[in-house]
Image 1: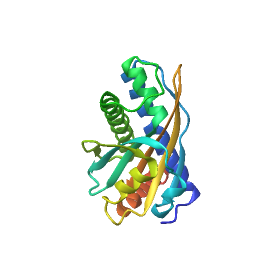
Image 2 (image 1 turned 90 degrees about the vertical axis):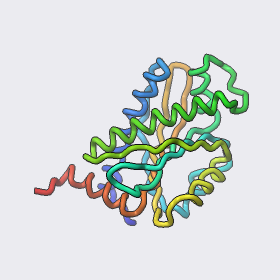
Image 3 (image 1 turned 60 degrees about the vertical axis):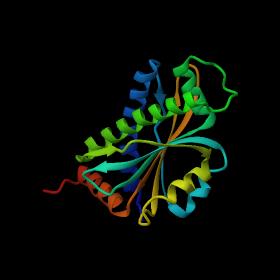
Length: 204
């Protein structure tokens, strides 16, 4: 699907609103101020995924998008290993960054992903005027590209584009990289763009 500059700007604004709510909810959860950069947005063909993800170990918390637009696709909270460890250190009161993921880390990351994605979808759904809800989460700790290929192998074949909302979260202690990734079914992406366009040019 061809995405023009105006549509990309609209998606960026949607991502900015959603990610801002996600960062605010994360601040409340961690009881620590979290600042967020404006998300960088890219809409890529599913075949180009290897240009954006490599063999770095990461945590991915995966949700199916549910609600009024079904079947809608998936949404993923992607956090590189070091950023994930920094987040869970904040929750668990640790300072050790040179360690492997523990079961406690995994539980913490699932909760972080659940909070971030729930608030991201709440904010974007309110903007669009629809109901969008996350399914119960699935967790993957793996090399980023391998984890993503495993996700793609399980989703519907009519998902052709991926929307990447990449942002940097900053606390008083650390910088944290994260990407919220939408894998909308083709009809869902068209509907999101239509609803965004109606915000600019309302149908009378």
